[in-house]
Length: 489
Ligand code: GLN
Image (cartoon, rainbow, N blue to C red; front, side, top):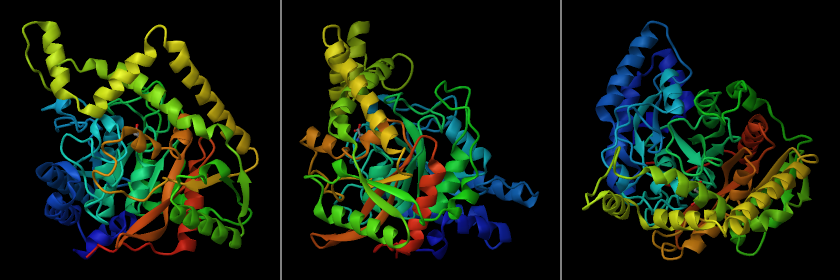
């Protein structure tokens, strides 16, 4: 593998700044890696070779004129949920066959304006519904640590590609854990910012009150850098927050563990959590304590209701959002004898089983007679979860918890048991329900069935406290030392 692929994004930008390499050279190297590893990892749905090389050449020309954006010339990947003008956007669904958007998502437009080069569109669970990547119409992405295992999901291709050096950084989206859980399964850093920090405009909608774009990278500095370019107010998303974007690149290295109040929620260390993960997260807490952090146990009593409430709220919103796929305006159309039959045929052929399951659950919980019993209750639980966090954040600066209850599991291991897969989200869903910023970072590895697998830990912050969790993650990264992968040859 070319040495330049192993650089961090920050290093790659520095090398371009000194003229040691060009964006075209970096982009060529990334494309070659992505193409060579396509069969093994299935990380990309579309590799944009020609567009990427043209964008890289344009970036090199801008640099020659002294026009240098924050991500000038940096090859990156986009989860295939972000609409890209003129480039196939699939959401990993058959129903979006041949859909080339007429517009660009705000986030991808911002990244392009910062000089980033999109090398391709990354695999995911269909409409971002899932936690393993197995629900993709294009087949599952594979975990580079062991390609018989899932990379997590739904940002499965983003995680696999970043971990496997097939791009420096990638976008993800997180509705109930889809950035953090795949980050933990592949040994990378993933940050879901506060709901409203990044625009959802042009991101194919799953559950609009929960969906949030975020950054996936191989270290904390790169995640901070990439998120900084993605974030910011957007008038085209009514839930986007009118706040200035902090200078995370400068602020992230300034944190300290001395006197930092870290809460370990007792509800996250429960039966069902792989003991090896519990041990690694607790060992990280001990190490942070030795470096001056004040670790205390905290309680988030409504945690146990989070999964149940989420699997009412998210499908309800999904059922409404997915009503637009009727075969009339874009994507797949399977003709029938009349309009209703065409709708039915199109939706029957176009949606996968998991998406259909959620549409049915969503319409059920929204139907009259069941609305109050399910949907209204779920919304109440959501408030209680947010209240739990608010209470805890009066006493601690950050919450430290496992990201996921298990290590990366085998492809097929849980695919016949939707509920088993839903329980994988137990530790990521609460922060999503409360709209809080949360990050996953590697805290160790474990041996399982003869392979080494990464372990992720999660840092959850108060609303808009991305700076605090990035600083904490950075300080932890210094303490932990380099995190090496066994496959980067
Ligand atoms: N795994 C969760 C789900 O299936 C979360 C998905 C996501 O965050 N997009 O809904």
